[in-house]
Image (cartoon, rainbow, N blue to C red):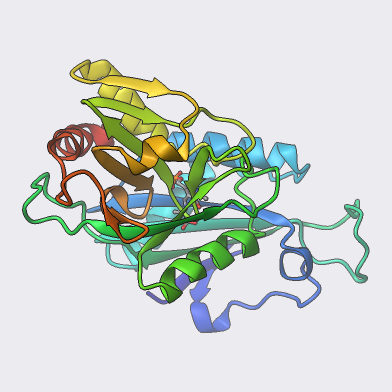
Length: 285
Ligand code: PDD
């Protein structure tokens, strides 16, 4: 895992250097993407590109790279780094200035960085072999622009760390109204009486590509009812199943929330069905 891309060039990671005056470093002033790829085939590439472009436009960073240019970068990183199960990380910061001033400087060039890292293989859709996650919950203490995939991730990092210190895999988050938002690095779904639900998109959560693909697949297959709606934490606590979704982890079943078992404490049948459909269709995106 050593070859990275920085500002138009591929190089060993040890040779990739950026300025300490880079606004990504000083302010977390940038956006990023993580694109999963299995056996050399990216998943949801164009959806990741669309989100990247939207995010860049929202924070007014101009990048001249086309989807095809990004695709070439991703493919080179896959070829250089083994073509197994990889996350392609793409990071665009506003760039380096000569001074530290909060306003967007006019004449600096964005810093563009990309590298590949190993992600887990997609699990078999088998509820008896997959390992369910344990999670805790906490009030969402992040900012009010969680729809932007910002590199300013300290709020997420602190929530994730809280979970690590409590010996679990993730922290799921709720707002002041006790409504589910998302998790520190994933979106969240619940299942009750075979109905699947996930919070609607707004400024409180990231529009996850995996979330979007899963909803689309389940709707097209029409075997389960799927709802995007406000979900309160009482519903989360009494759900039959809870799932987390993200590009690096896919669709992950949760078996324990705040020390209490989810449903009957085992991975559920609906997860197994959803995972089978997700595995069958993920390369359609
Ligand atoms: N995390 N919500 C948050 C806060 C996230 O950080 C992520 C992804 C998601 C899921 O989005 P997607 O399905 O597009 O990956 C939801 C990435 C993988 C990360 O930061 O590593």
